[in-house]
Length: 210
View 1 (cartoon, rainbow, N blue to C red):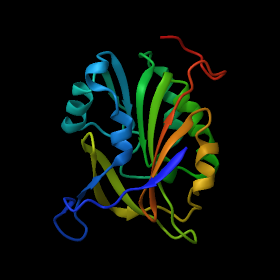
View 2 (view 1 turned 120 degrees about the vertical axis):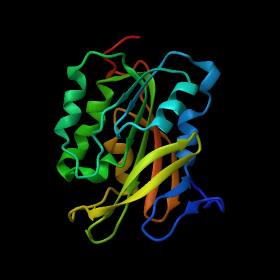
View 3 (view 1 turned 60 degrees about the horizontal axis):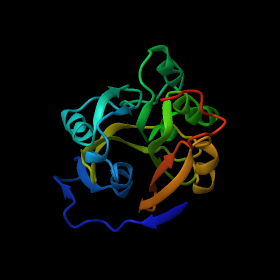
View 4 (view 1 turned 135 degrees about the horizontal axis):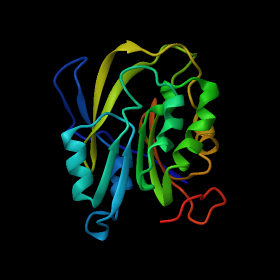
């Protein structure tokens, strides 16, 4: 797995302190790399709320089925909601966007996240995730993330801060994402990293066939 630093783009827009900004996202670019005309039957699971922009992006990159689960909302997430993803019969997902889910659950719940996602994904599925890293257990400023296009994401500050809890460190990410394999990592700023992982085809964790 390679980790690269992503230089801030001069085109990044901000309307002032506390306002939403548009940030270059090399992880999102890697997630969509090679899609588009190459596939017309993708299934997408986005754990955030639905937006028109995200739906358009998924559709033009070959999505036939899109689900916005609204698991990653404006508050701390109930990890139990992930277990309910398997309650509704749907196609296994090829693309999964988990955003900053690790930051929104309690530390003892983090280990189950990848297993819940693997239960609903297709062989060779791609997973995108953001991880905030902060020191000393200080309350973490919270953001709502959403897609702008295939290379940018929107970061909107929220009014609340998460409770004190240990942050996920770089050395933990690969372990926490098993059975996914981390392929790409990017440092967006010292406290924010992006990861793109793949669900290994033919893995012992595979329980569904296309």
